[in-house]
Image (tube, rainbow, N blue to C red; front, top):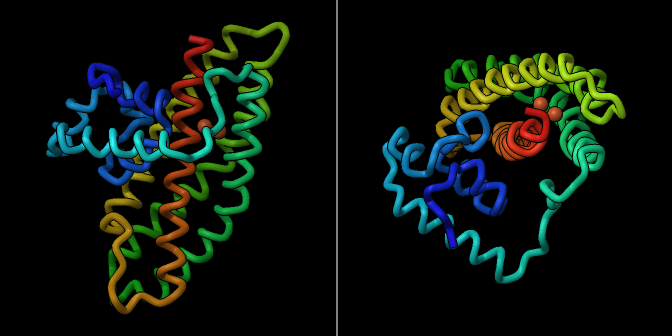
Length: 224
Ligand SMILES: [Fe+2]
Ligand SMILES: [Fe+2]
């Protein structure tokens, strides 16, 4: 059911339903997705057999009922690019301004009492500044180059390298957000703004991991 010799990026390509389990264990299937489950678990001090059992349960739960999601590997490049823009870029353009304001507010109001919120807010603000130019670069330069009838290999190579480097930086910020929030754990006294911030940051993490995974492991290999 689950070939543990495969990289975790490949496992997520075959079974997207395992992504939330990996995310919860901070096993990076995006920028460090080339690792096997065993190697990734060793880095995090986790027991690979326990994690593998959880992955198998997630796959069984999906097989028992849920509708299949978008099949990225079967999609043409124009279709895949359109999906990334409509599903992930549009989401970020809505979510980031909201999160930027909410994170600043929560850090301002509760930062004295809970200093981790300041570290968290620094990472959220950096992410909110880094992503819009990255999305624009993909939409204005990279994606048109990938879907051009006469692809320019030099431009594509340069743009894919830039994309990959940007993703590493985004991955670091996502990691800082999760670590500084102690895996999005809330104190008992957290107000509604604080609770909303953590719920929305978890949703943001889920979306970005899926998005970067599609670009790094489905789109990029078609051109490299
Ligand atoms: Fe993107
Ligand atoms: Fe990207």
